[in-house]
Length: 295
Image (cartoon, rainbow, N blue to C red; front, side, top):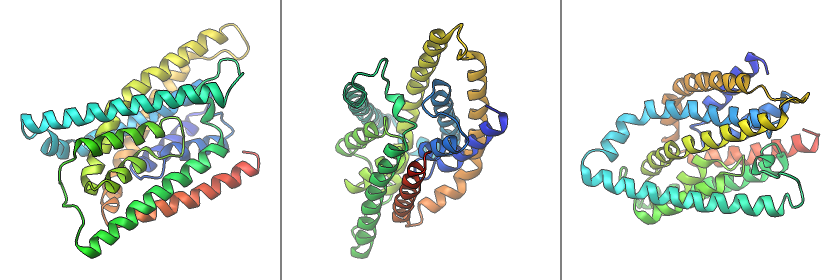
């Protein structure tokens, strides 16, 4: 894969990450259009490392807000820690359960079936985009109704354990399905459960800081196993080149994320959440079209 393609994918990821429109789906479609295989170990590692780059951009951007919100005193930090662990627990339970079910049913009989085999299948990406689009649209419309009635949750109001648990549950649903936007689904779930949008947003992006390193390690292990399995064959994986390419992509996704974050975050909070749902539904139609035409 050329440096140009890596940089292009990194820019797509960096600019799409903060928006609840599934940056993974955009990267997968871009890979398909460039003739790459999104399910290959090299590409899934690259995708995870692109997420890692934007994760660092998110840390740099939200750090001061997190310090004010979660580290203002010991009691506040303990409450946040409990909620984050509770949410991550449910993410692991749901994500691992789905992984086992899909590998044993959808890929039944396939040798060495892995959940990553789903990532390049646009017939799954499209309905996942549509599902999160509906979820965002409903949450956004309910928010507008609350504004008209004067019943909108107060900005900065604290998260509770129920809201945190369900956000973690929904995050688990996003793990195996490219297109089901993690941020769009978790923020919308928080809003549907009565949490303020800014509170849901901060907590959603805090959760990804806990999740990303684990996924990074899992994909690196998968790449090493694939490299060992193909050693000595014509399809041998160049482990060093794959890791180097992934690190390069991480750097550019970090830079792209920093450039986009300030503008995107202010637009996100401008009361137009439902428009992201409409965009996801439109993007779903485009992905269905691409799938129907052989991509």
